[in-house]
Length: 317
Image 1 (cartoon, one colour):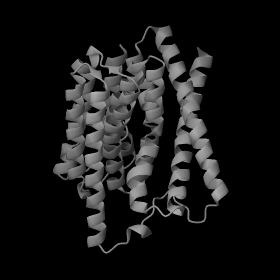
Image 2 (tube, rainbow, N blue to C red):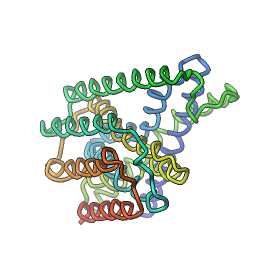
Image 3 (tube, rainbow, N blue to C red):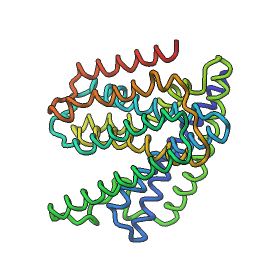
Image 4 (cartoon, rainbow, N blue to C red):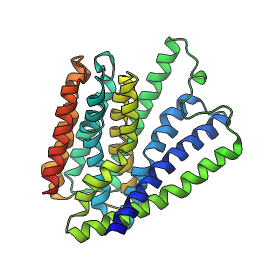
């Protein structure tokens, strides 16, 4: 089992590094080809950072372990709020009272409710996939036009605002290397992680869903955690909160939407009675910070982190 755990961790590390490489390569190639930075930010960066979760979900379905796919998304969304916002708040108060994330947050809640409603059909199939991807297209279109209008009103040229992954001086050969590393590393990392997570689940008599909700979910939330910690230390609460809200929306609509086209994802009864409601409840905990202009203080950091620890205990026992 030591070797299995080592391979699982190796797969996770490869996934994270490959996802980062793919984003850097794709962003720089797109900008070199003349694609506007605004479109790159809303599409390539967003999908690129979700690539590990997507590859894991697709691999899990192909390996007849759909519980990992669904558990990964639901568990990641819960972890993104309780853990990814809780831990940084322990290090520094996050001044979310200064942020304006109301509209995006409402979209995230709407996506969560839609997702839960579809889950009660008992399976995420091609019909559910079309509904989720249609909602994703609507939200992306809305975000695009809102961002464009904001930049026009501010008299800011979208071409001047490039993603932080962009490097105008990056040589073409380096861009190609990043793309190759990403395209090769993502499926390799996904295969290592899913295969060994499934082995561990069967060894301990734990369901695939529980492994997805815990080990896989926490692992794939590490990029968001790293981003949020740095944003909190730099007093960029809007980046931290926006990162979590955007990531959760993409997990629900894009990951499961695309994965459901690969194969049906049955919904275990435990999701319907517990995990989905924990995910929604965690999302509703953001109301004071989004609508009531509250900061995420260290006290809130303790509360959120403790709630996540309690959730893990309940899931694992």
